[in-house]
Image 1 (tube, rainbow, N blue to C red):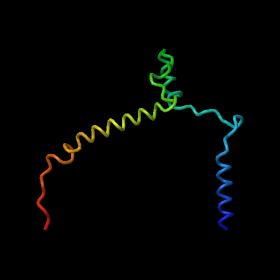
Image 2: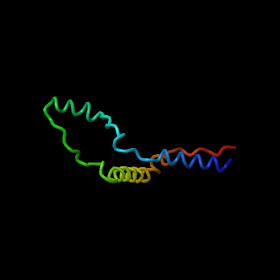
Image 3: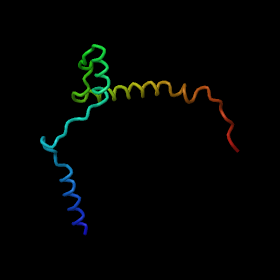
Image 4: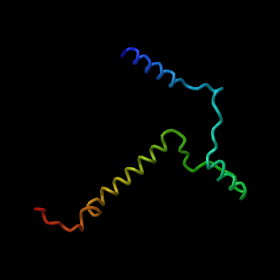
Length: 95
């Protein structure tokens, strides 16, 4: 029974992980930027342009998230004592 279950799991994983061919690929859904923002920009006489930081290339978006997390963590760590400890009145021990 365990061998049959293992075989079913293996074959289902193989079937699920097969890449789709180019003929089956459907066109991308248009996002808000393409449908709304670009429409209003064209109506106002401005053509769309490439973004200042193209985060679709490589791991640039991951780098920005890591940098923001490290910066926020450093700031929170620096002010931890001031925010959570200092200024709190000490409570007498419960008996």
